[in-house]
Image (cartoon, rainbow over all chains, first blue to last red; front, top):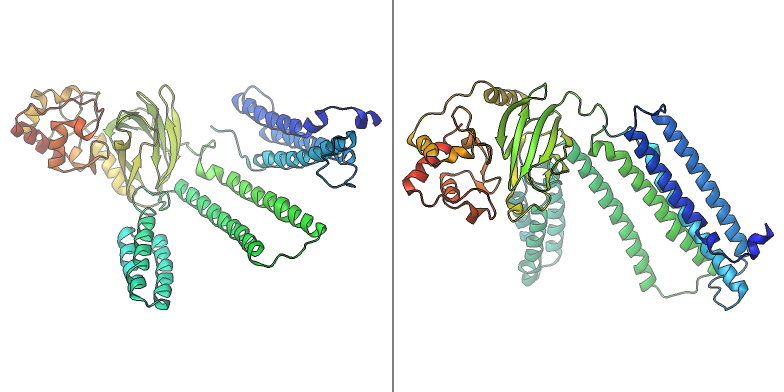
Length: 125
Length: 373
């Protein structure tokens, strides 16, 4: 995993929001297709609900992993922001800190997107 | 004390016989009394409190009445009202706390705060608190959704159906029988039974309109080429008003309908009177003139040869609460004005002006139409 710390890419920054976006799409597309094709699919409502619950757990796991990597990139919080010196070290720490904040936001967002999974009762007739 | 008493009177006048809002008025009444009791200067008794009374009365006047979502008379409107109250109280508490913290920060003498303390304040007050509160409010709103829009399977089964079509600028209302076939048509006035769920099949003839009875629930758009469904259950008998809630042209603001919520026995009697073989109205010169001047080309009246479908059905027009889709009160004078020059009352209306007819003819037609029960 050493290369992860050395490689210079913005992708670490985008990981958590991308997971949030994918989770959102999977939830909404899955239920839209399920409700549109109710007779055609041999799946029960609760199966879809549980499957999306599983997707949510995986999404939250990936975000937590991304947050841990970001925390490490930030140096486990040993230095305080703003990390604005023109050095490789500060660039890396700044990116790590920003990634950590985005991971926090994405974690909460995925939880909010999942709220209807708890309360949804049926497809609209 | 004067201020308080005045306020009570005004408030009472402005609100209907609704317990909730009378109770609210009393709360304001007390606070007003308290203020006037403390301040005795004449200019303040007759100055500021009066202004407060006027503003508060105007503000509260909007809370009740036949077209208020804050004065619910239906299951869906009650759910919306409940959601509104919870959100307002929740928002008010958060606002008070935020302003409290702001006042505390602005008024106290600043003392150094440790980095650790500041971080803790940010993490708990700025992150954890809003995340949890928003999570709870969101969960509550999502949980409430099926009550606000009862569209789940089964909710609409076995309910009476009414087809409502939005047209520029009126409402075609078609009552359906139990098999879904047309039973009878009317316009601009709905009659509904209290305590029974009714499903509306919503259509539009020309442009997008929107069906909304704030006191009962809704709203739902009416889109040309598409059938939308909405079901409502009134809980209180009374007369309510539904406005068109989607801009639909020059007379959009003049497109409304009355909703008469009746006890079920009365409703069944009203419906039976409409569905049995129509009784021909009494023949008068007004009826003869109605046909001679071509009114029947656009309007239908049950029990007569008039079967026009372009304009609103005029059967039992005399019983309706309003004329011209909620625009005029149902009086002979208003009807005469409308027949003479409809566009001066409703710009963009399709009905041509009949001002060239002799006054006597218009009066006779109006008298006959007003007598249709």
